[in-house]
Length: 484
Image 1 (cartoon, rainbow, N blue to C red):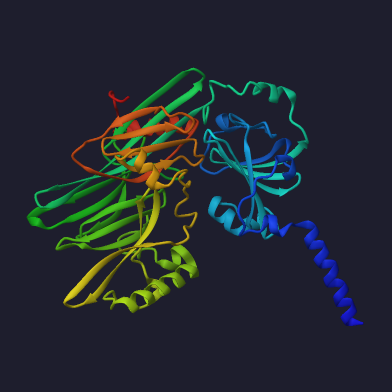
Image 2: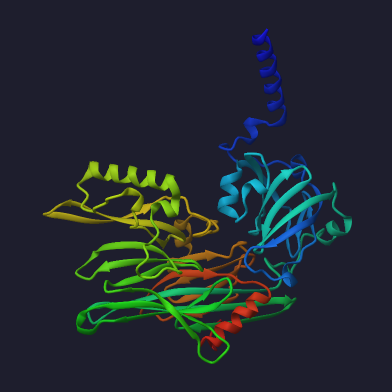
């Protein structure tokens, strides 16, 4: 009898599961499929039920009430797509929300997997939707999280008519104000050693006035650092007296007076170091042995830490999976050659860095291999999962190799969070683009005698873009009179 009950229960459960989900079509590991929007039960009009700003975004520029979805038009505020394409995939709830947002996944749904619908078109439009259920969706746009509920299964004819001709000459990726705060590292060889400097460029663009567009560019000889409640600058100083190096990073708050308020020393070292990455909370440095420039070490540190505080280790950055990854890496390297690096406790492994490589942020480490007569210093890429608290980044639309073919002088490219703007770094210029146009918004000429690397990028919008510009100018930011 018990066996019969078990078989009946199992059969009912199996029928229920296969009736709710087509595993072949929506397997988390399967390829993305491209259904009609009505097949996804998304077609119609959606109303914003709740919105939360993720980066002190400004309500005046981001207040959106409705979302319209059809096979002909996708419209959300000032962002829209004509003849959009819809792709769908099933992904892990925890992985998606931990990597893409700062929301606790359990606050969204109890389901372990969520359906992601990608909206795109041939002109570069891109938006992800999370289907929570047939009447609720979640999306992130312009640094704001939105929860929407369905109010109609159709889209108003007025909305469809607005796009009927398919030719909207004023279309832009974002109608409003946006700023790009881009920090670059400049280096050159001088008197037998490497001289390092940092500059921040603030690129300001306002197209909220329709055909009347405002653009300006500013330059600062420091790193512009905006934290939760303060505007700051980070100054790097180095000294090579008697061929001995000393370098340091200092934070100064941009106050109400003419001069800033000195806060504290972030880092100090007698070993030559350079920044490879910086955000509002963390920074990454690369230390180079002056007697052998192939011998390098990396560190990732909190901006709140002092010199005496330890850097982040592998467990801080990537958890238990990161520890496992490093153990496997070291084991493989030991099979190839003797490792000279001493590692006492694997979870304390902190020779880790973040650098720009081929248009993306790449984790790095270094190892010393070989015997006493043939020592080799190896710089190694690490394919670690990137924590959201450390960095989030939009993927490249093209392969790096193809981008280099199109622009041989390309050094780097980085997108805004919504992928509606991007900046290209070349040997000679910093170029600011709207994703929907091949013509640049502006082009800033850079010093030619330096090697250049990108270490930081921020994208304020709305009133925040104006606020950032004001503090940037106050902190010795100079307006550039010459830019295209």
